[in-house]
Structures are given as C-alpha cells and as structure tokens.
Length: 406
Ligand SMILES: Cc1cc2nc3c(=O)[nH]c(=O)nc-3n(C[C@H](O)[C@H](O)[C@H](O)COP(=O)(O)OP(=O)(O)OC[C@H]3O[C@@H](n4cnc5c(N)ncnc54)[C@H](O)[C@@H]3O)c2cc1C
Ligand code: SF4
Image (cartoon, rainbow, N blue to C red; front, side, top):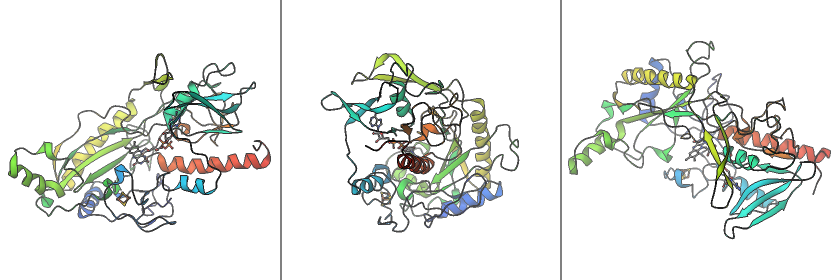
C-alpha cells in the first residue's frame, strides 16, 4: 500500500514500516511545541499517500486534488492498486451498475450467490458462487444481509445471534475550537495544505498510564489543521467586503488553525440499523433505517477536548475565534463499525475472527462492519489489513477442501 509516517512507539498506535513522512510546515512545528507544553502529542499522521515512488506507483506531486481522486495513482485506492492487480490474474469479472439486493441460499441455508438489480434495465439478475464475500462498506453490508430473508433466515442471513444490524458505532466528530496564530498573520500565503491531508494529528493521550485517569473510559484523538488549503475556510470569521476583505483573507490564510475530535463510541443497544417496513428505494429494495444517539462516554470526551483546545491555544500564543456548540450529528465521520460484529461466541456475534459468518461458513464479510467497536483511529487501514488476513483464511479453506473449488 505505502503509508507515509514515522515510528512513534505509542502504546495505542502500533507502528509499521513507513515511507518518509509528508513534510511538515512551520505551522505543524508550532502546533507540536504548544502540544508539548500541555502534555499532548502532535505527530505525523499515517497517510496512505506516496512520498516516494513505491511498488510501481509514482510519488505524489502535491497537486492537492486528492479529494477528487488522484490521476497519478499516488494514494492508495482500489482503482489504482487492487483492481488492476486482480485484473492481471485474468480471474476477475467486474460488473458495474449491479446493485446487490440479497444473498441467495440453498436448501440448507448456505450461500449460493447473489441477486442484483441492473441499474439500467432495473431487472434482477442472479449470479452463483462457491463462496460469497460481502464488502459493500459497513451499513450496506448489513442492509444486504437483513434483506436476505429466507425460510432458514427469517430475520436476515446468518442472524441466528440477532446481532445483525446491532451495535452500530460511529466516531463522534466536532470542532472543539478554532482560531489563528497571530505571529503567522501577514506571512506570504503559499498553497501549503498539500493534498487537503491531515499531515499531523494528536493521537490518543488519555487513559494510557491508567485506564481511569479521566471521567471517560478509553480515549480520543484530535486532528489539528491549518495552512492555505484550496478554499479559505476562515472567511466567515472576518468582516468587511471588497479588496480590503480579500487582503484580510490573504493575511490570515497561513495563520488559521481548526481542529476536530475523533472520539470512539461505545456499543449501545440504542444504536442499530434495521429494515424500514414501509419504505423502498427506486429499485424496490426495502430501505435501511438508522437509530442512533451519542452516549455519555463520547460526550465526556467532547467536553474534555474543548478544555484541551483552550489550553492548546494559550500554549501556542494563539487566539480563538470559537468552537462548535454541539458535536456533529451522527454519520458525519463515515467511520461506522459494528453491525456484523465478529467474536468467538456465535450467540452474540455474526462472524468469527476471520470475517466468516458463524451460521453460513461460505459467507464472508470484508469491511468495517465486523469490528465490534472503534478506537481513536480511522477504520480504513485496519479493514484492509483484516481483509488480507481473512482472504488468506478463505484461500486456506479452499486448499483444505472446506470450501469446494468451482
Ligand atoms: C469523504 C470521505 C473521506 C474519508 N476519509 C477517510 C480517511 O481519511 N481515513 C480513513 O481511514 N477513512 C476515511 N473514510 C472512510 C473510508 O472511505 C471507508 O472506511 C472505506 O472506504 C470503507 O471501505 P469499504 O471497502 O468497506 O467500502 P467502500 O470503499 O465504500 O466500498 C464499497 C463498495 O461496494 C459498492 N456497493 C455498495 N453497496 C452495494 C450493493 N448493494 N451492491 C453492489 N455494490 C455495492 C460501492 O459502490 C463501493 O464500490 C472517508 C470516507 C469518505 C466518504
Ligand atoms: S496531492 Fe493527492 S491527487 Fe495530487 S498527486 Fe498527490 S496523492 Fe495524487
């Protein structure tokens, strides 16, 4: 894959082999120094973005277009990395505009393939397989499984535990404080928010020595960003209009700092998805409903981060413009987990540790829905790592004959 970062020896953030980190700006060093004064680390984030050429992919040329997809293939994405490799094997048939509705089963309730709706013709098509792997991203995988009802699986395929759709966890996001560093006001603005990326972050520092240091359990991280991005997000903080307003925007451009907290949620029976009995989408597929509210633990972390940011701005010699009154609404982070949780006990979990459903051994799940809960980190790199591990197990099952070859 190629991940740019540094070895950091932190108990909550396992290290790996990294490409050189994305270069820091003046602002990052100011943030790091201020963090040190208040006991909060600020370190290079783990970015799947190539700072040097890697495995046949060119180094990033820092054009800043990442949010729209990289036209050079310099950050990890299936389009540039895994799909071409799979095509190279000549064993891949790629179907697009194919919206999977349900997993099909045989008379024993085992998976035989999937039924999908062709988005153009709106007709349903069935395809068959020895093994089915769902990787439709967290909640959509649960959606497909909940819609896969049959005589064997009246509440959805592989749901004898009743855990399917339950234990939805989302990262609490919100901006605990934003402002600017006066000594950077008026510096020449350069496009230094390369790639719109989170170059550095404050990895979890709470409850590491002792799990009960704080009022909440576990811990959160904070992204602190700034610099001259594609768009001057600080415009609402400045008054005026015309050329003086534009000059002011430019003067503050290199000096602004924003932050957002990434707080893991604890699993709660209040948070789940289920099938809406009344609503269908334009293809006639029953829709998913979300039930979610922030828990006390996440909200304690939110309050804690607001106090920390005030201390941080003071330590940085900065000035605060404000903070969000409330955290963002659930669903903002796009880091959902939990709805097909893995575990050793088939009575309380949907899959085993290999992402293989307990009830239907030839049905695997390769996305974040199998993680029982979150950490202070994002989900994508862990889910890619688990997918590789789960695929090894799947192949081993073919080798030993547990799964039959086509
Ligand atoms: C704007 C944005 C920024 C993000 N930033 C970060 C970040 O910085 N770091 C991080 O770790 N994560 C980030 N994430 C989250 C990250 O994108 C997801 O965790 C990751 O893509 C999930 O991978 P996946 O393979 O499970 O799902 P996806 O990448 O969503 O792939 C699922 C695929 O399944 C297809 N699909 C869905 N439903 C069906 C169906 N019914 N039938 C057929 N096909 C279907 C979809 O079209 C898609 O191609 C971000 C997400 C967004 C949207
Ligand atoms: S900045 Fe982003 S889009 Fe541009 S080359 Fe680098 S990875 Fe690709």
